[in-house]
Length: 399
Image (cartoon, rainbow, N blue to C red):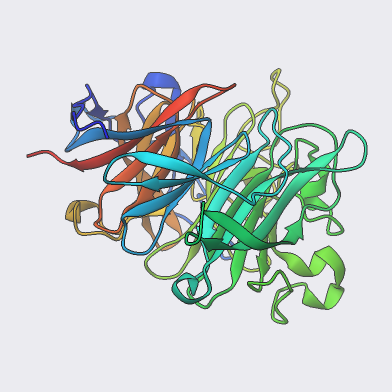
């Protein structure tokens, strides 16, 4: 393991610093009843740069890393590489080994092996959940979620009894906007974010599960109390709709679900996700189409739920967490969003259905994921594109 700590020239920029590809954070105090969000946007104030209160220590390096999760006890972690490799990492020495049994992955563009989470009962059942891009018949593909039991005894680590429990319907051409983040609720329900696959209209199509947040039981079946459960088929899976490319889903300390999604040319969104709500894409967005064609803003269509916070220019989010640790007590309850094009770590403060960007830390690299460690440290995965490597960094307080 590399033990040298890197004290980056990291600067905390309040709310809306545009350095490194970031942009102006837009917010307002008003909120609509359906899903929360701004009623009148105003540009957030900028603050003078101040030194970041952490140091970043490299722990390991991976090829195209995408997601990670800690095993109980915090001594090991699972890390996905987009190429289709699942790594079992030992934190103490930074060494990792491949885990066998990963499903076949369609790697290319934004597709590949994606998220990794543990079942809430992992200590007893050993179940690990993986999301990934899956090839179909012909030149089509879609996201899928599979689960299997992690076995680390009796030979090399492996997944046994792997079963696919969810698929995007329909599979379509292209290699973008899979979404496929996975999250367990405190009551054991499984949430999956599903991108609209750069096809626009499926986000409003109730006969497709693209451009949606889905809610399932842990085995992939549909809970009877889902908002559209009586419709059957993939419609029954839908919790909310009108999403573009939701790359982060997380619960805050009050159990409220939020999603962070990439906008088009501008308009990255942080949404307070409410049962049955429609967030309007592609009818509305606070960004424009690539090439400059206008998309009506959310305030032109009050029937759609509006974002609590949005960014133009974009930050290009990787995922989303809410911090609950004690290592950085001043940040307890804050949301953290890693930035790809903005090469940053963004801290957001939420209150009810509203949100504001509080700080931005320049990292000098594209950041794919932020996770909270068992001891309260923050962990970052640098993005690796097209076969490039990215480091796993541990953030701890200065001094």
